[in-house]
Image 1: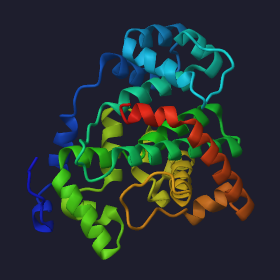
Image 2 (image 1 turned 120 degrees about the vertical axis):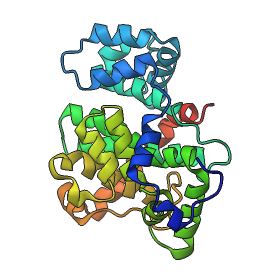
Image 3 (image 1 turned 60 degrees about the horizontal axis):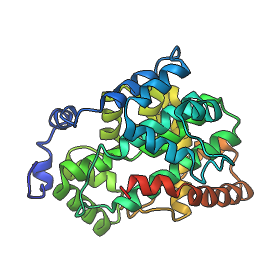
Image 4 (image 1 turned 90 degrees about the horizontal axis):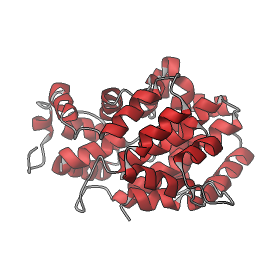
Length: 298
């Protein structure tokens, strides 16, 4: 990683091969997180197996229980074990919470990063919450509703990678995007060698996330190329746009994401629906402050 921002000419020499090597060199996932990722694609994983797996890491256990007992879920009685959490919330929700917890510490962009960590996670949590709201309104399968949260939470993870590995180049990309009033993805490609959706999708593949989540991360600005994973990509695309419109968090882009017409038609968007979703989103994001405090390391 260079300490000098790349010029556009220099950036053309940074091929995906170089970026892929940086992705391959990411800090190894903790054992528990790695096994949770394996469980993500294993439909035969049992509740007892999940409880024992999470219990192997006391830090993850404590933080998952902290989230389960937050106002976001609003249980009248305190949940004291992972087993109880699984019974109340379900296997997939608890597994995804554990994965979210382990993700917060994977990237440390630093205090002088090109984007504000707190604003980044507030936006990401907003997109995660909104994706679940929209999935429930569409009456999608429970598995889709549960994974929509993780897809929203991780949709911009490529930005954290750029902050951590190419901070000077990424700062130059953001500054130039604001100067020219163009999408930051254009300048990411120019200064960093690849856009954050592409990098995020590569990370998702490295972590063996389901194809639907990798697609949501990689295509949330380009729904037309979603192909077989339209539902998850559409949920994240719409949630990204609605979260920005609701001014929840900042993402460093002079041109905020817009709702794809194709997605708007699929969701049946009208003025009343938008108002209802945004009102519910603001309430639920306020309830999800515990997620933000944990993501910010507080």
